[in-house]
Amino acid sequence: MFEKYMIVAEQAKNITDGTGICGYQFGARLPYYRGLGLSMVEDIKVSVDGRNVEPEKIRFTVHDNIYTLKEMETEGEDRWEMGEIATITVEEKNGLPDGEHNLELLIILRISYMPFPSISKSDKKIVIS
Image (tube, rainbow, N blue to C red):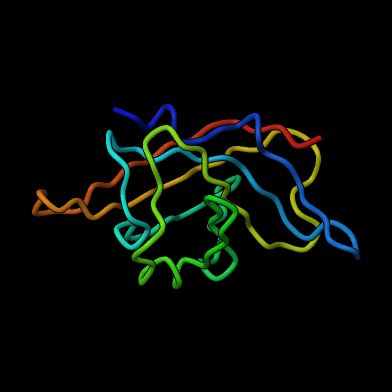
């Protein structure tokens, strides 16, 4: 239902540090009609051009707070609200080559009233320039 809004492709870009390109990032929206505490985000999986990203390389930023996926498991204070755009960063030397890429995003949520996890998957073309 909300899958088509999950990836904010126009925010996709390579990022730099003092030594050069150190990764890439894109915007992501919560695929749920209410906000959730970050500890309720069971998992985030990213794949680019058919290649899965290692979970240790993924960073999640919301409200200027940066989390690893492991840190999100126990984060009880911060939330991801409906419609709010979080930033997903992948730490990867040299980032992505310029041009079009197929980005896949899978988000697994724990919803209190559901006896099974909510799994949402989206894919979009992004352009790095």
